[in-house]
Structure formats: structure tokens, C-alpha cells
Length: 366
Image 1 (cartoon, one colour):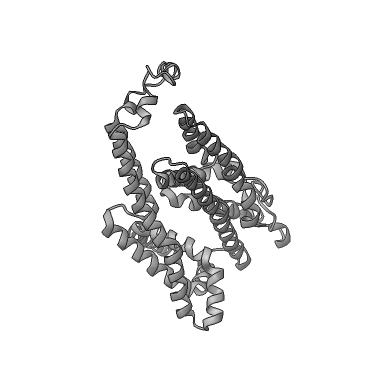
Image 2 (cartoon, helix red, strand yellow):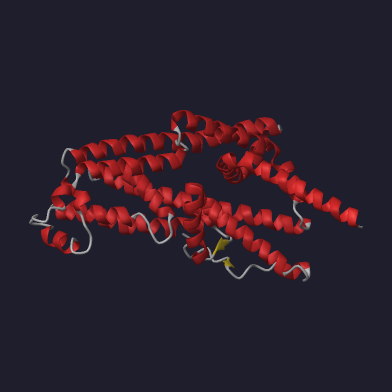
């Protein structure tokens, strides 16, 4: 008996060491694997139709991977490069003396009284320095670009990361069903419980992509087009900033277009300020309410409070990928807790929805 216990203990120690070593090897590629999984989950329904047409899982995987590259990865890389270039131009405009410094002048006839009041509580001296503000903008643009297309480490690092994502996507498309079956066998759960975990993960990924990322992209594009039409500088840069702000609960595109409308009004462009305000309220503001029911549909979503903290926490831990991974991790955790809570109940009762989840798609999730 003692020898059996010692053998099991030794096996447990060896397994723990093996798992730790595997984690050390895979940790640098967690982001790559996560991006590949998210993209494959989103495009898998299309991949099934492609395989049904071609009759070949390998050729279907090649075509599906090419579609993801053309539709997602290449545009992201090009946008990231354009944002860096646009931020550089905007920084140069500030360095050469943009209108912002005039508005922040305590002696300005238009904004002097407001600036003097604000400076009682917050110092605006750094914002008056074109060099400091330009450096901040360049740094912010580099961070956005790096987190958008994996440009950390330069162009070579981006190419390597994109290659790994594409390589992983091909095999996930081709062998997705067998990989899922293998994971189901590895999990210490009943087959029905494992299927519920997989289905919940897919639902949250799809709800995050369709209900958050696409709507944020639409709002950012609408805002960028308005900036370009009204002649505001660096429309592409501010459009991308609006996309990122729209991804964060409580924040939104209004954080950018409201100050821009105030800037136009303070500089005497009252018609442009009115047009931007109307566009922001009517078009950008209503995009979420119009698109979310059509894009998300009946997909189950998390409670707003969980969405808020999971998105912010995911951003802190995983960067932009945390916008998807944060809610997914919370949803999977809730599903596991629900399985544990109903472990001794009949299967019909065990399928009940956790208390912090809901089916009401008409309310905002982000």
C-alpha cells in the first residue's frame, strides 16, 4: 500500500514537472495560439461550407486561412502602419504650432477663463509643450500599433508572429474536429458537460466579436469619416482611437468626438461643430442599438458588470486580445462552477443557466 502511494506521488510530481516545462515552452506563444483559436472559431461556420463545397479538409483549410489573411490580418497590419505614420504627422503639426496650444493659453479670449479655472486643479503645462505632446502621441500610437498587429519587436517580429498565427490556423481549420474530440477526452468531465463548456466558449467568442469588435469598428469608421469630411487632422488616427475606446465598457467614441466638436466651436467653426455633434449623437451613438440585435441575435451574453471587469482585466493581462479572452475566461469559469454546483443533480436540472448570465440581447454588453 505504501509503495503504491509512493508511486502515485512520484507520478504526480513528474506530471507536475512535465506540465510546468510544457507551460514554459508554450508561454511565449500563448498570444499566437489565442488569436488563432479566436479567428478559427469565428470563421469556422464559413470553413464548414467551404469543406462541403471542396470535399477536401486540407484545401478547405487553405482557403479558409487565406480568407482570414485577406479579411483580417493584412488590414490590421496596414492599419497599424498607417496609424504610426499618421501619429507622426500629427505630432509634427503640433510641434509646428497647432491650434491646441492657443486654446490652452490662459490669456486666450475664447478659453482663457476656462483654462485658468481648470489649472486650479490640474496642471496643463505639459499639454502646452508641442515637443512633449508630440512624444506622448508617438508613444501612444506605437502602443496601439503594437497591440493591434503584433508589431512589438519591429517588422521582423510582426512577420514571425503573423506566420505562427497563419500556421496554427491552418491546422486548427483542418483538424479542428479531432482536436475538439481529443480535448473532450482529456477533460475530467462527462461528454455532455464538456460539450457545454465548448458551446459556451464559442458563444462568448462570437458574441464578443460580433457584439463588441465589429460594432466598435463601425463606430470608429463612422467617426473617422466624419473627421475626414470636416477637415479635422489625422482622421485615421482618431478613428482608430475611437475604435479602441468603443471596445471599453462605459467609454466610447464620444470621448473623442465630443472634445473635437468643442474644439471646432471654440475656434469659431460652429457649423462644423453642429454637424459633428449631430453625426455623433444620431449616427455613431445609435450604431450599437441598431447593429447589436442583428449581429448578436440570440447568442447568450454575460451580465454587464462581469463584462466591464472582465474586459478591463483582460486588457490589463492580455492586451487587445483580452477584449475576447477576458469574457471567455469568465464565462468558462461560470460554466465550470455551474457544473460543479449541479454535479449531484439530474442532467436536465444541471443545464440551468448561471445566475450571472442572461439571454436578453437587447441590452448593451459593452
